[in-house]
Image 1 (cartoon, rainbow, N blue to C red):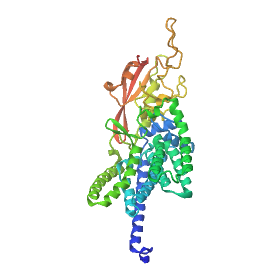
Image 2 (cartoon, rainbow, N blue to C red):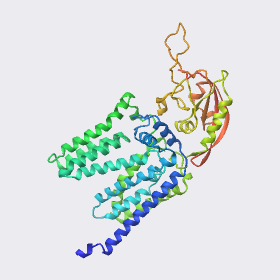
Image 3 (cartoon, rainbow, N blue to C red):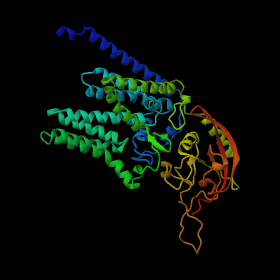
Length: 465
C-alpha cells in the first residue's frame, strides 16, 4: 500500500499532469486576456474613474473609494494610460482563482478534481471574462472579497496559538476589502456568529476577534466620516456604481456578481460530481457560458451595449480637436469662449482629458462639465460646476434674498451628446435661451459607429424654479 502513494505511481503522476495542464491553460488564458485588454482604447467608465482618481477622496457618489484611490496610487507611481492599467484585472483574476481553488479543496477535501474544475469553470464564465478585460474595479473588488472569505474561513478553522494571527489576517483583509465595498465588514459578525453557534463560547478567540474588529474599524473611519459629511450619499444608490452593468432597468455591480459566481462555483462543481444528471446540466450550461466568453475574447466588438468592452472609444482625439476648433471660431458677443457640457460623466471625462481648458470663473473646474441634474447622479456634482451659484448676482433693492448666482449666466455653451434634437433633456433646453445643432461627428464607441452631436446653446440662464 505504501508504494501505491509514491511519487512514481501512475495515479499520482496523472494528477500531477492534470494540475500542470490546468496551470498552463490558466496562464495561456491570462496572456490572452492581457492581449485583448491592452489592445483597446479607454472606455467611458475608465475615463471617469481616471477623473475621480485625479480628485482623491474617501468616498464618491458612485460608491466606495477603493478603485479611484488605487488608480491615484498608480498615477503617483508613474503608471498611467489604458494599456498599463488594464494589466491589473487579468492579474487580479489569479488570486481570485486561487481563492476558488482553496474553497474547492475545503468543500470536497477527498476530491481534488472539484477544486481544479471549479477554477477552470469560473474562468470560463462571461462575467469573469468581462471583468478581466476592463479596469472598472470589478475584478479587484471580487478578488479582495474572495480573499476575505478565505481569510475568515481560515480563521474559523484555526485553533490554538495560531488563531490570533488568523483573525488578525482576517481583520486586515476586511479593512482593505471595505475600501472597495463597505458592506464587506459585515462578514466579521457573520464569522463570529458561525463560530459561536457551532463551537460555543468555550475556547473562543476573543483577542483575535477584537484585533480583527479594531482593524476593520480603522479601515472604516475615513469612508464613514466622508459619508457622514455628505449625507450618506455613497450608500443611497442615487448613481450607478463604477462597475455597474445594465440589466434591464436595473444596474448590477459586476464585482459582486463575479464574487457571487466565485463562491458558488465550487459547490456547483461538487454537486456535478454527485450525480450524472447534475453533471450533464452543468456541462451544458458551462458550454453556453464558455461560448459567450469565447465571443467576448475573440470578437470583443460583439459585446452588447451596457456591458464593459475592451474595445473602448476610438476617435476621441479627433473629436476633441474639432470641438476646440468650433469653440475658437464661435465666441459670444463679448469675445468669450463657450464652456463645454457633455451629456454624461463618461463622455465628459473622455473628452475633457484631451482638452487643456481653464475657466477663470470656476478655478479647478473640469474642462468639460457633466450636464446639471436635479439629483446628485455623479461625482461631477461634488466638483466645480457651471450651475453652481458662487458669484455675486445682480442685486435689486427690493429683492434681497438671492445673494449669489452662477458666473456662467449669460454665457454660451457647446453641448456634446449622442441625443437627437427631440431627445435633449430639459436641463439643456430649459436652461438656455436657444439651442441649435452645429455639427455631427463620427465616433467609434465599443466597436460601433455612433454620431456625436454638437449643439450651440446660447444665453445660459439656469433652470427655472
